[in-house]
Image (cartoon, rainbow, N blue to C red; front, side):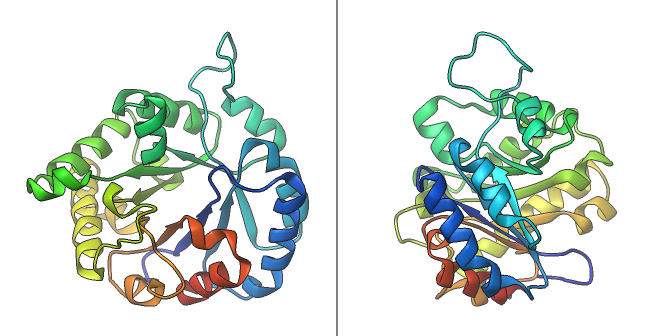
Length: 254
């Protein structure tokens, strides 16, 4: 992390876990554990938990994120949620392009870009996910894959709008597998993304951009990963479901 240039962000991605009552209980348990953290703290919750999570987080330093958003304002899109709906609930963040959305639900680089555009138009802050498959890493094309995903997703995004974009590098081979990129591997790809942002925008935009690592970061490895100069936080899966473990990660960043 380089706190002189950017404030780290630790975001939990709860995935398909927790009822509204469980969401409230988890946030209530988390609040005193992260109250003094010198970083942004975000919980990405299922749609049905948003209202309960927002209520539980009131008066604290915990922000709430939705886990996806559609690109249209309304229409015949059964099961989808619009940015305007999230705005009505006053949700500040949304996660877009997570590998599980791409793998299981047919998301593509193009639809990710459309969701990013809709979210920014509605004033939402975006946690934009990218990352390579194991086969792609073995082929030595990690840089090409990650840069292509990022550049497509950011098509039409202005330098000013980049202030509302967080990029989460999440190597697909390290999500939910217990495998983690080494700190050096994580930093290398985060640095590649930052170099791309400098080319697309400017060095100032690149220096200000928050780039998280999102591949099985947990309470045991967070400090080492967060010590890397280009790793500005984490997008946390399983460890975010346990208040005490998530708090360790948050406090390692802050």
